[in-house]
Figure 1 (cartoon, rainbow, N blue to C red):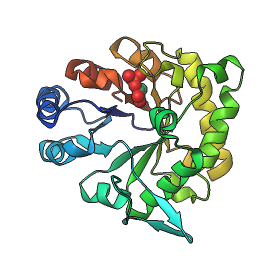
Figure 2: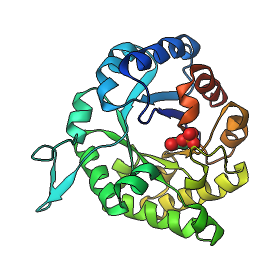
Figure 3: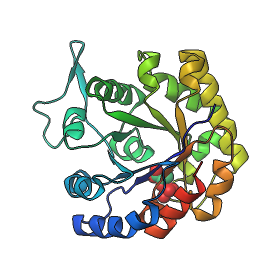
Figure 4: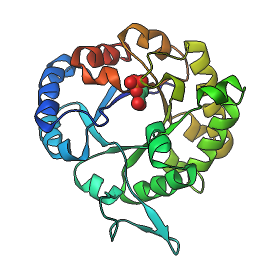
Length: 260
Ligand code: PEP
């Protein structure tokens, strides 16, 4: 089953709006003719409007880095007294197709849990916003031989109560925590082992038609020098890119490696 690779740049808490515009001005000519891989950038909330104008009519899609959602009395809340927060409905309204959810930095620094991510995922589906759901083990968990059980638990919990036809629209990003921003990358074999296990779990939970189309990105120090061999693995369908997405030439080179 051929899936189209999807490369998304997570700009994190980087780039003033003018710098985001400059980065895009550099990136656009490098990738404008690429029509055999999907591309997205995920700026801070404050740069979304500017980036939306710059990517309009191009092959670059837009995403946010987080969303807020709570569930009250069985109802998903998209607005209310939650100072400082931004809901999936607002992110969709701002022109985003995507939102990153459950990034390990959010889990580590802001106490996010799989259950909380699940509420966010369901709130996104309610408004037609597509989630990039991040999972991955810590170094301690890998060293303890728990990688597959941790990722299994995360995927099950994040996708709980979702119908298969909705899961089809989501992307899973496998991001070993020990590889994020550290310069350490999972070997293609280590990454494929986990991607294959995630695909098998999707098959068990949602059936073949869904498991065959969900894209599973790899994230964790992916760069031009290692992208090709990671992306050659059968269950790696793109990348979620942090540091290398802040350099137009590096991001473009990774996208080039992801072409069909
Ligand atoms: C990330 O934070 O999603 C990520 C993959 O970062 P980096 O590429 O810098 O490791």
